[in-house]
Amino acid sequence: MKKYKISFLLNLLLFFCAIIIPGSCTKKNFSQQSSYQFRSANNIPDYSNLNYWAAHPWKQDPSDSLPDILQQNYKPDSLADVFFIHPTTLTDYTDQRWNATIDDADINAKTDYSAILYQASAFNEKCRVFAPRYRQAHIRSFFTSDPETEKAFEIAYQDVKTAFEYYLKNYNNNKPIIIASHSQGTKHAGRLLKEFFENKPLQKQLVCAYIVGMPVPDDYFTILKPCTDSLATGCFVSWRTFKNNSADLDFVAAEKFTSIVVNPLTWTQSTDFVPASFNTGAVLKNFSKIVPHAVSAQIHNNILWSSKPNVPGKIFYTQKNYHVGDINLFYMNIRENVTARVNSFIKNNR
Image (tube, rainbow, N blue to C red):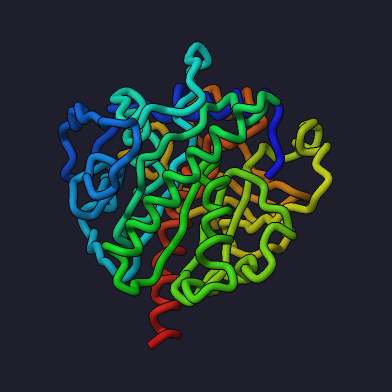
């Protein structure tokens, strides 16, 4: 997948410093932050140890959380598994590391109270949520030409791969699988889908891949296809969110490929404008609150255009790149769609 210019990457930072504020939210049955005081002897994750999972059904973690309004009628199920690959949280430009240390307490807490809480939790109604900690590449890896870049991404991917292999061997038991990811996580998810699912027996267990926040060129996969509607299974969806009429963004205009974009308000590739009335709810800075009809959406060339969110805060009024909200702006639509696809998969595979 293509590298990005700095203007894009700075928005990644805003995701964590302006929208997602660790510890500022209400959580279902999760009132105390873990200590994160575990230590790896060799800086290699041991996925038999639950500390090396940011989300896991055998422990209480932020992926179990719910906005307040959903808690009363919450009926969790384990019909399928979601393997969630989190985005970059190693974003401090004063940090000289190329990869996160696997037992870094600050990074792990940041991951859990940002990506796991605000993103992975969207999948918790019908699914057991598995999200590995991994030695993620530093955010600078997306735009520098330093030869260390590819090594950094390779280290990160090998951790994700090892975690997925451990999951398959020890936890899956032939359950339906959802692959979900954002940003750097999507870079690794693409490789994982190619290596383990595409034209492999495991593809029969794939409910859907929600690979969001990075472009997926239309020739990236050979067998795996984009989903055609809200109930299709064995397929993938992807989008990148920008303020509408943002065609002047240089790095998008410079792309020399066609990217797959599925509109999360309709789950199709139709380029028709879809009004905000189709948006069943966003979850943004205040995790406890669902914001209905937050944005409209329309596919435009390689990206998803969105209206300015109907929420307070300066970031959506000063930025054109809504990467900060790729999942959160469509939180309830994703949540509802996961349920629909899992039910469709089970019905068609009895």
